[in-house]
View 1: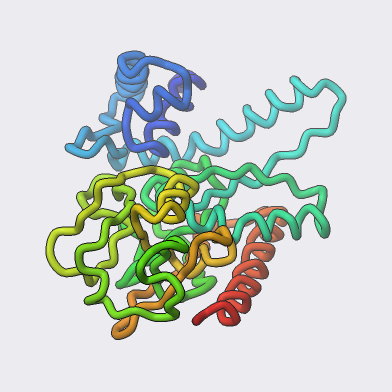
View 2: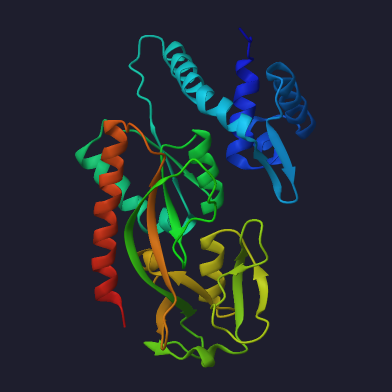
Length: 310
């Protein structure tokens, strides 16, 4: 029987979830070279190649997926034991590990967690924000129980590798733009896409791609995007200042500050879906409670947005 190192298995899980040795090292507090050596040691132990290095990072081989699939339950059980030992006689509750892309984390998750705090206070949730690609890897690596992902036409998550995922559509709505109170378009309910020509955009970069998130997809020519940021707070403060505009999914409308205005685009509307995703199999009752709270929050968000739509 092969004697696996628990620490090496944790490294493999982090590499699978993060998609790179560098990101896994940052998560675990190791150096990148230490992560590489531990993966090499695990490959020597198993006698199989477990990861493949690619231009945009690393991914597991079939052997790596098989090992991680069996190791995930053991890692979780050992982490539960560590929590119990750390808590002495205290009752330890394993949290539901929820992932969400940034817009959903701001627009839907707070309402869902507030509902749980009122109705099911015994349910503990650990939230992790990330891009849809990162969250898919984390789900398959076993480090998340459930996730909210962004659905873009043709409404499939960006990773189509096995194993398959259970996908539920919670909401669908148009992509909007937001402007500050002093912007030339302020006060308008709707604009035409052609009126956006020449605008400055504040954007984020999609992971592993050159696509800019925040530019209207129908804009003609090369976008003027001098501001590239990572978080929504910075985006919206730049918009409020009047120096740039950006796009938002409908799910974010309830979280907009008062000095930022959203508006619709005439013509063929770009649409986005809010997806609730999990790995197929037995789901804990607590995870089901979190999923239901997210469904309820999405329904409320759609109702609010329908009233706020210009």
